[in-house]
Image (cartoon, rainbow, N blue to C red):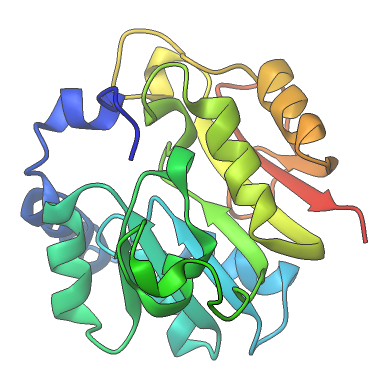
Length: 223
């Protein structure tokens, strides 16, 4: 676990799970499309692929992908969000964890990071075909932990695997007064982790990026 508090925890107090779930339930009831992230992910990896929903929150993306035939694992630090995810999909693996201290072995079994079962002699962790970080996960990490989080996410990918992340680049697209992460530094973190930018989009629906305040970045590992 990281020592500093995430920006998400500072904003929400760590008890936003039910409120967050209710907001998306209202959107869905109004006819809004709440599955854009999962739909894009389904174009990046075939059904049956192993997917890590990093910063999974209430599990909206992972649950939808599981319905589409993907093998999904969700990880988040916010227990209030994970409580909702576990109640909605108890058959999926939901892990409490800090992305900047990600334990690949724990992701296999849903055990806490540092569990003795994942020490010396444990079976090798299975890599993921795709890691998705939706919902402003990257800019809401603890300050200073972002590069290490990206490195850890890249490390759990198979060779040639894909990391897709969408986040706001200005106050209009973030729950804070200013951006905490820019595309140039995010790309640099990905490059340092062995990932190459494949394409950049303006939305999860696949619109080309036009320099606006929100971007979805698709990076792929070297095969």
